[in-house]
Every structure is written in structure tokens, then in C-alpha cells.
Image (cartoon, rainbow over all chains, first blue to last red; front, side, top):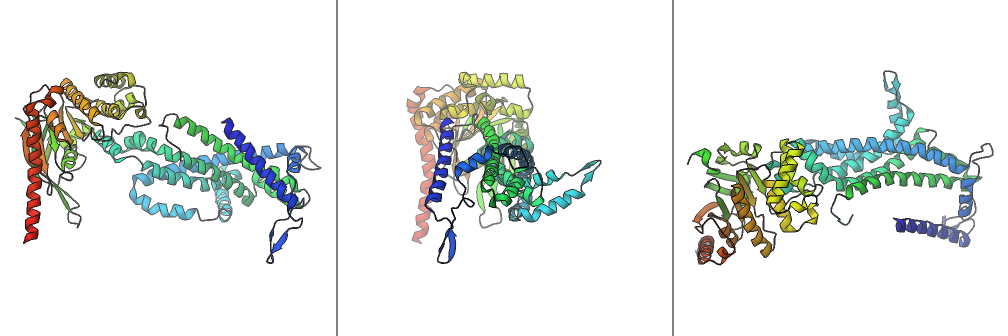
Length: 286
Length: 272
């Protein structure tokens, strides 16, 4: 665990060194190769110093604000984390439910699976206004659809797919011996599902959930931007990017926040995985 | 013998896979077999002779094309629902996510036994297979032979009168295998269980059975039934007994006799 953390810090340091090294030797205003401007600029606006990014973390957000950037970023990340967690939860429940139905009924599986694959080719940005407008029409009793829920649903839209596919494969991974055994014990369909298929599916579900965690973070960040929801890290990235011509180091703390957010959600899945794996044979993970 | 007094009664059973298609296979044709209560019967034959198919038909895991099968006087399907038999396969098929004792509890759990009662029975069964000390272990911490003993304990947990076994010792080494055979005879005598046992091994069949059913291929039929009169009590000395060798030879010839016939027919066909 400590070793992993040290390696992580080392990798981060190496990236920072590479960044500074290129900044040192690269041309200030970039360069052309065969008429294509592909050599990146190294001036302070395009590539701020690593220490400037670090320092910016602890400075105030702007002249009109007295809150340091790290606090603003952390608050935004926490807001987005909750949205991503909601999206992850919705996506996982939907994904597992779809996989269960597909595993149970071959007809559903053959009919539905191609559409699930196609669904992932729809760009999220195209879908965002639709979800917002549908959500705007939902009103049950005194409850009306909040805008953040649209963002969570868009996160779920990316998250459900790996869960559905991974769980489906997992549910079908029970050995034929185990299935015959359950039949010889006169187990009902739901007993076979609960006592054999689901436990057997767990090793395939865990990596799927990890993919879903990162997918929901990406979904939420993109959806915040395309629905214009304030308060989250996606919105912050856009705002800071606009200011980067005058305050270029400001963007990077926001990106760091987005990365931390993704790691936090993957960490939650990792804790779950650890709990599960203690019960299982020590096989090489992969 | 009345129908209800028979552990297993197979009458006029045939099984055709993929009927009416180019892949049609006549797996079994017109099979008759009776197993008395407490009797140990082994099915032996070349690969593809339908011995596993016959076992699965008795277990009602698949349905016969024609004919009837009763287990303990009940139609096979009813017997399966009532857990009148327990089953063990070549792979122990233990669930990795359950402890050993919880694996043995599985059939009782499915039957809706309450927790304390099924734990008590499962521990009794583990004592029977001499694995009481391993109740809280995980299956993957056990050797192959131990896993197979857990599988037998699980198959017998509900105290079924019949045990169906499909090459359960096929993946074990020779020494473990002989030990397991002796253990199985002891367990079956202790619990008064009838057994239908599928194997490839001639010495295993002779050592274990009161009757060896020799099957032949294409179509799958019973070609010989050999009574093994080596007495009820069998131990290490049985394997070195002259009578044992005689029976092994008899089963081998029954198996080979058929193979020879087939090869003669094949070459004869080519000559003409």
C-alpha cells in the first residue's frame, strides 16, 4: 500500500520533470513541421511552471474573492463527487437489473444487447439538453425534477453500460457442473440466481464497477458543462479555462480536483473489492 | 420386487439428441436397469457410450425420449424435486465463496431448513467424511481428495436414499483414489445408501460394485451385466484377491469383446 503510494508520487514527479524539461528546451512560440504547427509552445501562458500551479492552489481565487483556490476546487469536487456517486449508483442498479433480465431471458438479451452497444455511441453532449428538457416536465406531487438529477442521470448513462456487460458475463460464468448441481438439488430459478449466479458473477462485476466509477465521473463533468449546472468541477474547469489567457496556472488546480474526484470514487469501489476478495481464492487479478 | 422397493427402475429408455437434424445422436437405445436398495451399481464403457447420459436421465437433469424411470418408486422428475438422490461430479463443484460447512449446508438451505438444524446436520456429515476440523476452511484451501469428500458430504446432507456419481474420483491420483473408494464404501454402508456410479476404471468398478453394467457405443446399450460376488466387506486385501483379478479380466473382456466385434465389422466392410 505504502509502496504503491510512493510509486504514485514518483510517477507524478517524473511527469512534472518532463514538463519542466520540455519547457526549458522547447521553442517559446512553438514551431512548424512541414507547415503544420505541431510543436507546442512553451511560454508561460501555454505551459505555466509546475511551481506556479502549486502556488496558485494556495492563493485567493480572484481579486474579488478571499477564498483560496484549493478550497473552491475541493468544494466543487465534493459537489461533483456526490453527483457522480448518485450517477454511479443509478447506473449500477440499472446495469445489474438489465443484466439479470438478459441472463434470464435469451430473447431479451438478443433484442436488447445491440441497442445497449448503440446507446454508448450517442454523444453525451447531444443527449444532455434532451434529458434536461424531459426532466423539466417531470413533476410528481409537489416534487419537481431538480437540475442536478439530470446531470446524475447523464453520469449513469455512461456508468450502466460496463456494469450491464460485466454482470451479464459474470452471471453466465457459473460452471455447467454447478448449474447441474443446483438442478439436482431442485433449486428454483431465483435460488440459482441468488446462491450461484450472483456470487459467481462478483469477480467480473468488480472491474466493471471500477470502469463505471470513472465513467460516471467523466459523464458528470461533461454533463455539468453541457447543461450549465453551477457548483461542480466541470463548470469550474470551463470558467478557469476561459481565464487562462491572463491566469494560466489557475486551470490546473481544477484539473487536479477532477482527477482526485475520479480517484476517490475508484477508491470506494476498491474498498468494496478488498472486502469481497478476502473471501475468495488468491488468484492473480486481471 | 415391488416398484416402490427399487431404488432405481429404468424401463425401455431411449434418448435421442437433436432429433430430426443432421446432428441427431442415438445416445441410448432401449435400456433396462434395476437397482435394489443398498446396492452399488457401476456403469462402465467407452467414451460416448451414454453412461453419463443414463446417469443424468436417472437424475432427471434431462428427459428420456421414450421409456420411464422411477427413483424410490416415484417418477424421476418428482424424485428430483423431493431430493430423493444426491449427486457428485468429477469436479467437486464447491462454491469458493462459501466455507466448507456452508457448502455442505447448501442443499438443506435450498430446502428451507432452519439455520441451527442445517448447521448441525452439516457438521455430522463432515464428521462422516472425516473433515470435521475443516468446517470453517475455504474449499480452495483443501486438497482434491478432501474437496471430493466435501462434495460427497454435500450430496448426502439431506440423507437421500440414492447417490449418483459421475466419475467422482477421475481427477484424483491413484493413491488418493483407492483411499476414497474405501471411504465411499464405508460411508454408503454407514448410511445404507444405494449408488449408481459412472467410471472409466475397471479396477475401480470391480472394487466398488455389487454389479458392473458394461455399456457399448453407437447406439448406447447395455451389453453385459457382471455380478461381482466378492462379499459385502472389502478392504485392501480385496484388491490382491484372485477373485478380484478374475472379475477385472471378465469386465475387461466384456468391454473389449465389443470393441473387437466392431473393428472386425469395420475391416470386413472395407474389404468388400
